[in-house]
Length: 217
Image 1 (cartoon, rainbow, N blue to C red):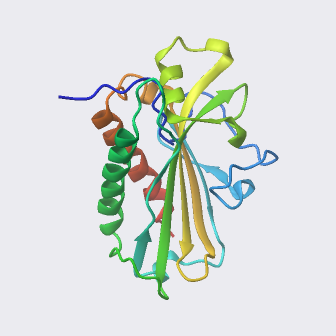
Image 2: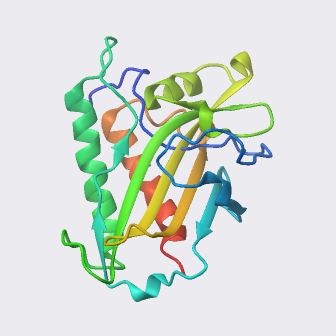
Image 3: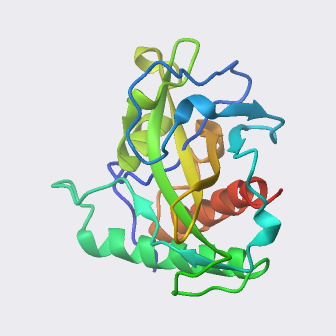
């Protein structure tokens, strides 16, 4: 039997509402997961999402023969309204398994740093879209984004989104190879994220889409 998730569950995924003209604001203070948000540029994206990407001009992902997967960062804490630490850890474990399955189709997975080994870091968070653009200062817990999405659109002129951030670095030098931010429309998760299992499935799909752009040369 599915455990219902209280609408205060916050999982870290960037989402943009379909049809909104959105742009990154490089002047805002970054939350710190990605090293440089100002490098990101929008690229052609599927309906209901917007993807921003940057690849170091002297980095060749084809030079890497294995990858270390860092445990996914979910921007959510246990709450008085019913989200437990156990639920958060369950979601983290299952999403990690999904990330490993996705990456292993392209590269062997290892836990040893070495030449030719990349480190893949993934974070999922909620955010709000206010006015014309998405700002990295507008991050909110995943549960808060889910709650906003369940309410009438346009409430307080804030539109919920999920944000998936991916950083790929050299495992030995920490040199940035590629970074990607994927934002997903509230309409794409509004009706399908009110149970732990449903959210985990959606989150894995979102990460899969984001990794597709992060793994290309």
